[in-house]
Figure 1 (spheres, rainbow, N blue to C red):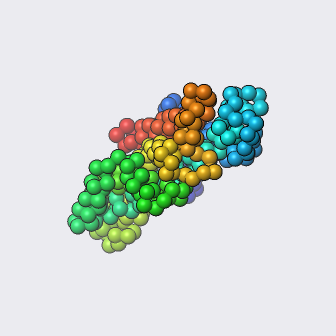
Figure 2 (figure 1 turned 180 degrees about the vertical axis):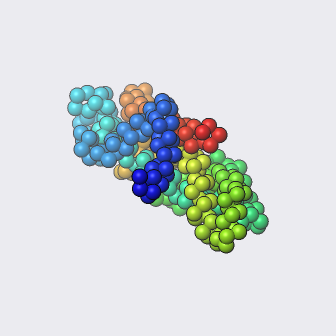
Figure 3 (figure 1 turned 90 degrees about the vertical axis):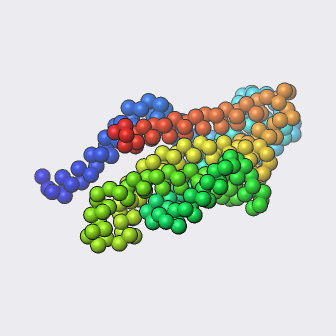
Amino acid sequence: MNPVDTSAHASQAPRRRLLRKFLRHRMGVAGLVIVLLYIVVALFAPWLAPWGPDTVDLRNVAKPPSLAHPFGTDQFGRDVLSRTIFGAQTSLVLGFCVVGIATLFGMLFGVLAGYYRGRVERAVIFMTDVMMTLPSIITALAVVTILGPGLGTTIIAIAIASLPRLVRVARSAVLQVREMDYIQSSRSLGATDRAIVLRHVVPNALSPVIVQASLLMAEAVLVAAGLGFLGVGVKPPLAEWGQMLAESRTLLRSAPHISIFPGLAIIFLVLGLNLLGDGLRDTLDVRTR
């Protein structure tokens, strides 16, 4: 066998073992299926939605579910099903953007604090301690109040609120990795700090950060819905589940369907993300391997 083929096969073996282990985790697979279903719905929303999300029909205000409107209509005659489908787009875009930004900066500050230690570590830990004294939604609410409502500012606000935990997880992982023998060997061979961090520290400290990021995405969806419910999140006419819940408060008794379906959409997406995060945690955690 070609040595190159043997090396490639050996490098892929751990990935295959992790994949097989994840596929044996039933709850994790169930969470993955739920999340993939939401992603498909969000990607094909323009074709799946029977009506436009902002199409107003004042002749059919707050109508119960029917063949024409399977989820009924809201107080403006808009189709609840269509708005719920397009709300999946908003929530997933927001969640993925939050996780991407928070993971990038969390890894950056975590590496700085864990690898270089000293004053840098003390400054980073002090900032994370201060931020973690407040609940995530309070921090996000304060940032949105300063920057103003909107999708972009909501993403920034929730990413800032999610940052402290990712920084702490990344720092803890880096502290473990930096004491490994291969890190000391790289230093003795003259490797620069930049090369050690990029080639060894970051790849080996990434697993717990990925697990924490997957769990934080569920929280990001909930915080975004909370901000939308308070009227300081995503601005209309963009469909967003928390905003839909807020608009339906006055009709909760006469037209409960307006709030039931976006509420269920939030519940199942958060459930899927949590199950997926648990599956990734059990798969990537070195203590269970």
